[in-house]
Image (cartoon, rainbow, N blue to C red; front, top):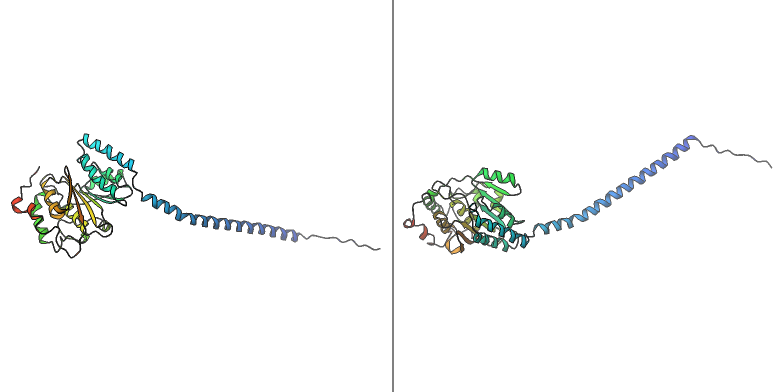
Length: 313
């Protein structure tokens, strides 16, 4: 029987082809694995984002814990009773803090004046909107440098304490025009209007306003007439939020603060007085009304017969 032997010869090109196929196969496997892993990671991350945002949002709306709130108030009250640097008493602090505590959501809190209590107000209104307005660009700059998280603006006042009664007469003449109680102060030319703050400040529905500045203890000082007028207009022109705004005026025993408050915040809205602090609750008003107070209410405290010399005191 005849047999033939067959030889299988492997051409070098076959090895190359097989090697190339294997290399490409592993490359494709790696590519698909990487794509799958990336897609899985992306989907997992995307699903987790809403949960994270929800948690953050819920946390940001939480008020300052009561023990921390009370501790801050206690230690600052102790300091205010033992230090001449503070201009506000423990009873006055508690009056403002009680309103901040009652806010159903973190308050929108506007403060005229940088004082000993500036950091306290910002802390008590935890996670709320707290804005400071002061006459000193230097103090505002130093505050922003040390505490960049605090929002503060400087304003150049053109009024003087000695001109208060003249300004009151002017505002009455302009009651249906530039000095009306419901308006957008950004576009107001009223001499008592603070109209040079950033635009967004006028869109905020302020829940609490504290007037503790600018200076008003001598005839040439700017006086707090513009701050009190502006607070009255912001409260009556309020859009969104509640219908009422709590307005506090510090050192209300002084003539400028007392007379301006009677004129623009109204005596009928005064709900409490603690030492030198007047607490007003002002309701928003319809745009077609042109009086700050019921007719005749403000005339008693600011009539010519009641005027006294606004000299340095």
